[in-house]
Length: 238
Image (cartoon, rainbow, N blue to C red; front, side, top):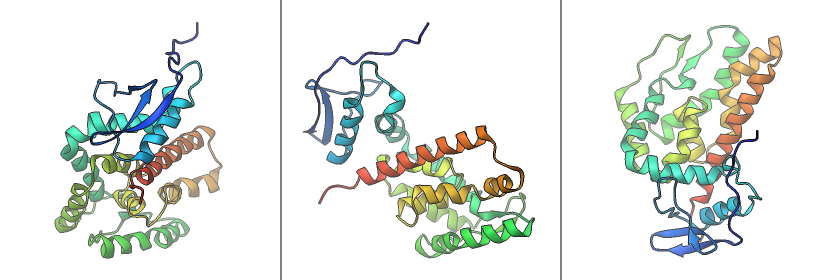
């Protein structure tokens, strides 16, 4: 027996201005979040992109094909009312940031990490005023509390929508610095994903690639690209 899926029930999809932003309507009726909250979007670009997701649905609705809609629901229902808790969780990645932990062997991997990661460590020290300490191996290295405070302060200056996008850009690669670098336009999501996988790629070069691991990595990259697109759609038109 096939799984039940809701069927398309509307003919016309539109993005329309509303008090406080933009909304998506289906045959003139505004979309709401799963919790029945108004789905008010901050920019016309995001509203039109979400409208396109709904308009692309055929006879059966596939929520998996609407990542921006899911992100908008999360921003409204989860991130906005729990902003401080989400920011605290993401800030914790700065204390154990992937870029701070380097391989002590083999030398070729350690050299590759230094070449690829040091420029972002240097960028964070200058642009974010957040110098991170570097260590070899997995023994935790304590970070300067002042550095961690500056990173947390940077998160406080985001909107709930930006914090929603940043969530996947931090948690999926395991690095607050990589996520902030995408947010600030220093690198793109594909580069952040590649930099987070230096060790995995090195191991694959030595022992061969695993199909299941590669599929999981591809899914993470897709999610990071959606987050990157969300950030771009949050920029108001000029």
